[in-house]
Amino acid sequence: QVQLVESGGGLVQAGGSLRLSCAASGRTFSSNVMGWFRRAPGLEREFVAAINWSGDRTSYADSVKGRFTISRDNAKNTVYLQMNSLKPEDTAVYSCAAASSRLWVGSPPKMDYWGKGTLVTVSS
Image 1 (cartoon, one colour):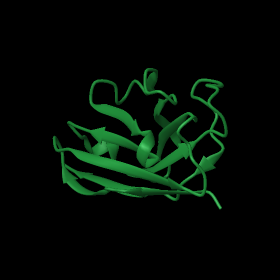
Image 2 (tube, helix red, strand yellow):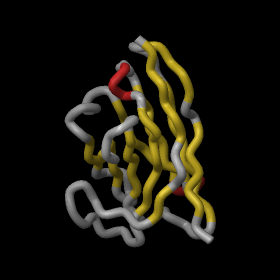
Image 3 (cartoon, rainbow, N blue to C red):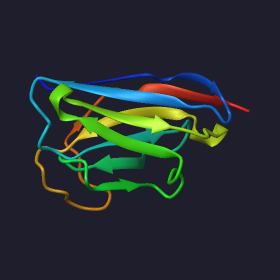
Image 4 (cartoon, rainbow, N blue to C red):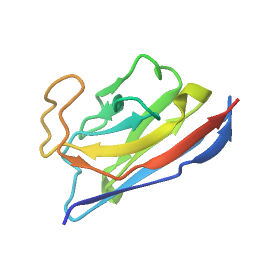
């Protein structure tokens, strides 16, 4: 059974940093596109960032460019999201996602597996 488990969320003051991790189990995702999405209270889920299997292609939402960095460690089957200069509007449940293949399909890329998410709260 495929599982994506996020960790690293919490409460942080505006301007602070957090690093989210997503550990995959049940199969290896070292050859797959992976990404992060978020859902703020009362809003639709939105794309945050994505990374290809080798890490040499990334994509970010305009709202997080220059502040967030996605990375991965294929040996650990883990993807990360480093979040700096956090703002109150970044408050959301952040979910990890993975595609079923290495193909980057769509913008944002289509995902097939989803984690349950971790809550990030940024206070002003």
